[in-house]
Length: 325
Image (tube, rainbow, N blue to C red; front, side, top):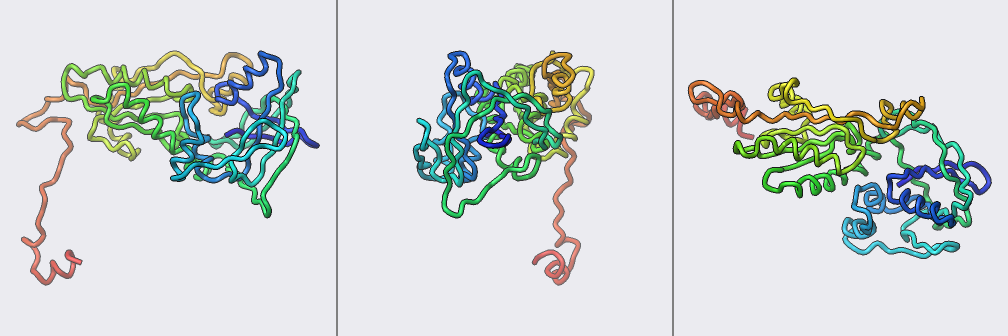
């Protein structure tokens, strides 16, 4: 899913990023010096939007995911002026072509998913060849940085889990991307470190996790007793189980999304590439401390209260009135 900006007449600036699948195809067209056909779909069915923003391996049919979410195949129709097919559920379709010498125009700034204004950039210009629409068509727009925007990206959670789980299925229990970073920039991995032989695997898995996406910037690893969907629990684990001098690992700078301003500022100033240091937060209990404790009680075991039966302290009438409802 990409943003576009109407320039006037029949010209549209297309925010095509090289690291996306459409960016890959556009680069191939430029290398060959041929026109690049594309169709802008506005107002598709929800499952099409979800499939479009889901991180999937190159070559995977995204419409197959849309069909799986829908519970039936996603119908498509042919464009009027292009050799392309588009979802039949589309409200509007803008057909167009980016032609040599690949004119560019400045696009932005616009509000972006991290709740900052985007950094204006030169983008390729598409010439519109046809506009089609349904009767009584309804325009649908996703406002960046809103709950609607983030809800679309929640499917990245599944992709991240599958990617990380495959690294070591017996060690990785669960994984998620945090909603506060639009399900992109901070990953949480839950692991089962139940023997000394598994000490250190949390770092191997965290390092490999960065291969999921260049946008991933921080990976936090926690034990299996930590609820990875509760940021209060994540804070608790980092506070009580992570010694920063030993368990924070700052990696060399790598590329990330230009709309993260701490990285995009480098492009704005022209001083270096769009990147920032990657970070691993090891919030798992070090194995050497697993058995530490007194009186047979492990130090890192959560404190728990014994269950209390209030019927031992209340009359039957009060128990029925105040407890049993």
